Length: 226
Image (cartoon, rainbow, N blue to C red; front, side):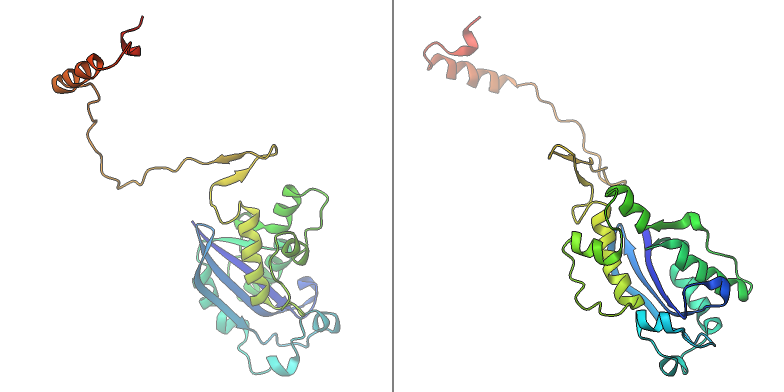
């Protein structure tokens, strides 16, 4: 199962008002575990970074001025994500910005149905508890001390760890129950596993004779009671 943990940074908070993406980071997971494949790019938004957004991520106009524009990166981005499930913290926000960028270039939108929103996942798992990324890192003892500012790659790395905990932790298939017990999903046999013939379990003539000889040496064996 291939998934992409995705995060973006932007010039502002509303794609509908013309705010643009300035950073995209994607981390590939296979069966909920990182493969080591990462795609991360800074993007020239062709507009100024807003004051509020600058305070969040610290990425300046001067830093972005020589970076590629989204149209130069879109094919590479779409090739990396492919048809994988997208794991996003507050998916509506990031998909809104990505789809605005794709629409400008005439590309189909990314469907909301292919996204796993970890905010919603956390709220279902821990009703009433804070569902922000920092709060979840604290809950799962994930070190986020380097997160003095938001950054798409760092946030995606932290989110991949949080997501792993939300779906059951590092022991895939193990879920703790409410009474402290554990339920372990049965492992399915590999489709190419060799098929072995059934082994006979009935005792042979020599085994029966050896058993009878053993009984003769025992005082009141239980096998003769009844």
